Image 1 (cartoon, helix red, strand yellow):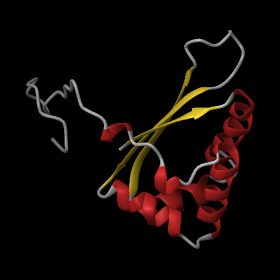
Image 2 (cartoon, rainbow, N blue to C red; image 1 turned 90 degrees about the vertical axis):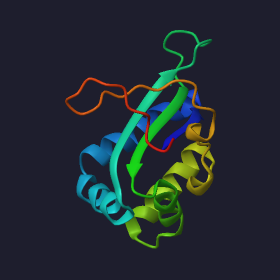
Image 3 (cartoon, one colour; image 1 turned 180 degrees about the horizontal axis):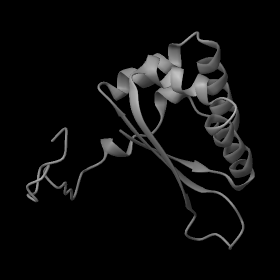
Image 4 (tube, rainbow, N blue to C red; image 1 turned 120 degrees about the vertical axis):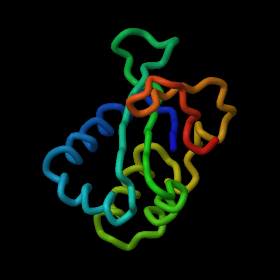
Length: 130
């Protein structure tokens, strides 16, 4: 699943600090949360806004998640009573004013091109889910 949202310039630094905590002091809690939710891969990118001034901050966040049931994982996160999940959800709502269960999904758009090397054969393979 691919998620995307705008990151306002004034929220970029607090969001970066939050992600640093997930990589550092809150790593174990984060890993436990993702294991409970069935998420096996999570990548986060920040793409600077195309029309912004250098150093102005902000842009578009892209988050790639792999899970057997990505929609279900987000629903579980949205409904979770676990302290870390509740804190994470509140933080995202405070920073970006959205509900995790209602994030815009890039994957809901039209897939125009995909390529994946087949394991060991060098042949094209259709993307998962198509």
